[in-house]
Amino acid sequence: MQESKLFAELKALATEQRNPHSVRIDTAPVREILEIINTEDHLVPIAVRRELPYVERAVHLIVDGFRRGGRLIYVGAGTSGRLGILDATEIPPTYGAPPEMVQGLIAGGREAVFRSQEGAEDREEDGARDLDALGVAPPDVVCGIAASRRTPYVVGAVKHARALGCRTLFVTCTPRSEFTLDVDAAICPVVGPEVVMGSTRMKSGTAQKLVLNMLTTASMIRLGKVYENMMVDLQMTSLKLVERSKRTVMAVTGVDYAEASRVLAEVDGHVKTALVMILAGVSAEEARERLTRASGFVRPALSGETYVPDA
Image (cartoon, rainbow, N blue to C red; front, side):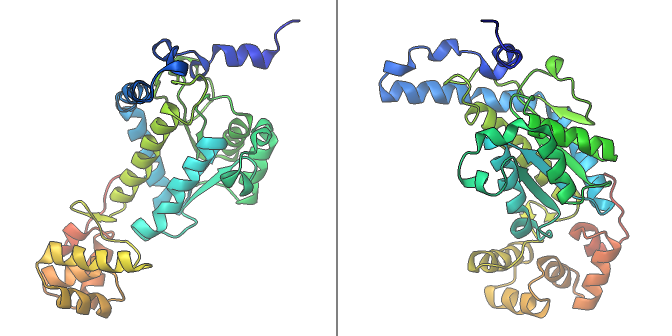
């Protein structure tokens, strides 16, 4: 019987190759299994580092989209889809961003987040349909995530986004030389064959998580949501975040717990406003005006200067 086109395609993928370093893992003692996995995991950050120029380009595109009122939409299937949803879900409490600013789509919908819906990834038209359901249009940025680069649901979504005029990104673990999809930035950390052949939730998933962390963290920093190396736009939506807000104000300004609590209460828990009030010795109203002139960045707001960041 002749091989199917899909079989031939999968056979050639970097993510579907056998790893020569783990061929005896099936009968290895537990410690050796763990050492093999850990040794292979060390390759991941090196592969990601090689892609930093492309991650940088992607961040510029995302920040530009955000500043023009757009959203970042992740699209994936299986592990890749769940990673996108995880990254998107963490943005509102961490950076005080609205939930719709970063969103994740997964083949198979909400159920696929908790239970595998493997066949859902096979239809390109579903990716386009799910983007339309979100009303995706410029200046939204759509980022496909697929370790193998071939997942039909993801490819369909990215093609549709590009046809709509949106900026498009793609995070994959196959070589750039094999990437043929037309996108604005492709990020291709090649981590090599998985310890267990084809199990892309391992090294490939780790690489994708590292990339997504950088995309959103760098973008939020460029939007002024970090002062020094602290979150200053976090939402006080839990007891932990309430106390973290107080600790941040104390660490930056040197005031005690009671004063940090008092000032935060005066500004409805807005850490950036509290910092400018205390450090610049101004009223809440003046602090807010300074932050507006400084595009939300604390450092220039402290001196009262007008600041318009580049991308």
